[in-house]
Image 1 (cartoon, rainbow, N blue to C red):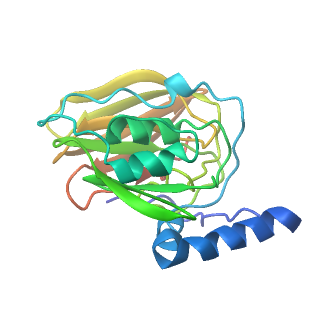
Image 2: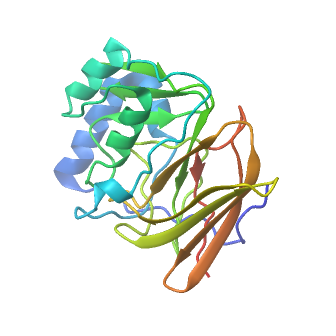
Length: 229
């Protein structure tokens, strides 16, 4: 898998005062499992004026029926004002929360499930068979290493930015070809079929970024190597 040029990831400054204290309390309450979810992503900046409807695309048809969101996950999300009927709806809803990260609750997107956690507990929900989530964070100067997208923790550099996204499978099939806008977290989200490899291309302001993707069992759901040049 091609890695980005030699520029190191840049860490954001640590929060100050009360915000720092609140974050330490949250991390302690979540415990080891919650902290593991938080560890996936980090630096950057975000805004509060995102157009949520354009930051995550509707899922393509999977090979199975969408299962109802488990009650534990539904209750956890409800504590934070998020309503969803399926895991796919939950992923989209949390990714579209119009706030810079980190959030007061977390969610980690894996190849076949999403795991949520907050100070009161954690819950998992299986994704519809055949669907894989690609979260994309194009950048110019600041990025971070990431493998599994942290819905409440990952923060990209370019919040509220119009982009053109094209995802092409290795066999030439175009899986995604659309205009999108990054959310407050600096990401766009796109559902693709599982078990494929190929290339992601993002265009913005006359610049282009590309990187490979793998929607297999060990594939990354978080692509942060998209340097616009």
